[in-house]
View 1 (cartoon, rainbow, N blue to C red):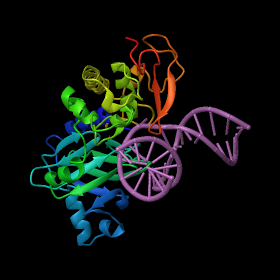
View 2 (view 1 turned 180 degrees about the vertical axis):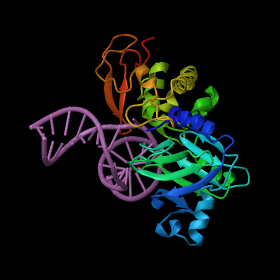
View 3 (view 1 turned 90 degrees about the vertical axis):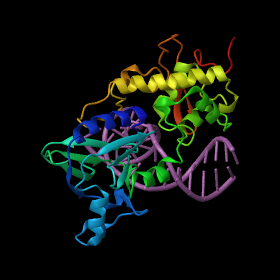
Length: 290
DNA sequence: CCTTAATCCTGGAAGC
DNA sequence: TGCTTCCAGGATTAAG
């Protein structure tokens, strides 16, 4: 469920704990959560043979000066002249610091650092994963090239050219990571509301001024969500275990049939691209009333 | 091109 | 209380 703001908060908090430290060991409890050399790992990879040594190296055992990048909802953990790891949280993924005691349920991988703290990757639903690459360049080439531009810094002009590529409903386009990377179901609805755009408007037909308003709304909504620590609906936590506070500010997501905070009209719930969608029929008219 | 449905999973909430 | 059904922040695939 984590979208761009949640992933960015995780990146920032994780980077603080990694700065100046080294990974001492890696423990893999679920090898099939990891893709190594293009395929899912099996028990042989976490045994004692040469394959397990390769995997531990790929998982950055012994590495220091770690850096953490983000594009859309994806993270890259790497260090100069070392392998790179793509981390994706899927719907229920969490990266959590742990001092002592047992890890939470569904903790598939644990990195232990030289300061003694553990970094747990837990993901009950297992829609997320870890992908191993020989270098950051390989990771970017294979996993980030197919993605559209990052939503946090999307320019008016770039959003316009991206939306011009498709005739789909604008909400469906926003959810497509190849069009724009980082927006999911929460922030698509929130940004469309902030821009006053109906979710079913055809992406290609939206005029330049309205696209500019949407680009601005996307940047502002995501930035504000990051400042609030992200949206916690249920599972999401920052690595220190604290929930995000942005859900309190949601104008439309999860508020079907409740009054619009701007005009008081009852918010409508519909389906767009198989996803629950909420909008204000008054503030987000399909056609401008002029 | 587009949309829809099914799929990968667990678990919380709602309904009976 | 217990059982069943539905739903969820994501993303890919196949089919129509």
